[in-house]
Length: 141
Image (cartoon, rainbow, N blue to C red):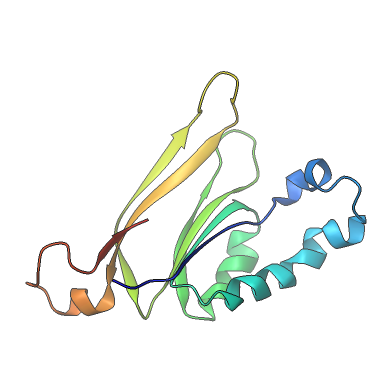
């Protein structure tokens, strides 16, 4: 299966002050960056988009990408964190077969509330022709 996959850290709005110290606050803000982020994501013309540090998924990113043929899922980080991760895929090429959400803390020294997603996708072509070679057209992200 020939697919284009892009992974992108969006820089959660809650983390802007920590990460963008020294930059003009206007250009570091989500309000300024959101359209640029969308423009960048579309340039990659990806079949699968993996996003980290995502906020505003339901009200901004999902509607924007859905209007361009994507569907997907979002998982908010645990605890009081306001961001999470998102996986999106082009509906014309892929469909979801299964998904598993993961919540974990890596270690005592790296004790942030982290999450991950594992998604099994299948190409639309292989789903339309069952009985083909086992595993053909399946992708694990």
